[in-house]
Image (cartoon, rainbow, N blue to C red; front, side, top):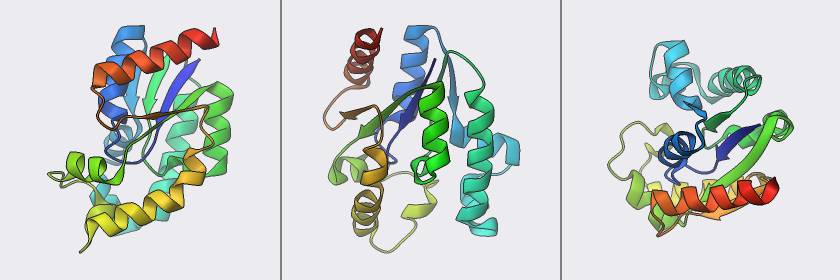
Amino acid sequence: MNIYLVGFMGTGKTTVGRLLAEKKKFSFVDLDELIELKEQRRITDIFAKEGEPYFRKIEKKLLKQVSTQKKFVVACGGGVVLDEDNIKVMKKTGILICLCANCQEILRRVSSSTHRPILNVDNPQERVELLLKMRTPYYMQADKMIDTSGLSVKQVVAKISRILTARK
């Protein structure tokens, strides 16, 4: 079984994923980092030069490859859930856990980040609110939801561990 962490940017998928994988003795992969490695360029460059559809195509292909592995914690990009096939692949090969946070928490966490192409706009808060509203129905398809607002990484990992123990 794999553990797929989905959710909006800034909800803690990568940070939580690394610690969770260490604790469970699983391998860890950040899907966005894998895309950058395979493409040999940053996601911001992929978005700027090829556009989001091209990025989503690569994301889907690499998710399918990763899903053939066992005992992986996979931190997925915020938009991976927009493709129904991606959700099916993740649910078939593991548990899908959505990390969420309120808009203010997300903006606080990503405010110093320069590698988030969808936030390169005049009004980032408006953009985050819109995207959260659009993506929430997709995130709701996860097996479990965890609000990471105000929680430490260790607290989130503990919550996930309890969910995994209860599923056995």
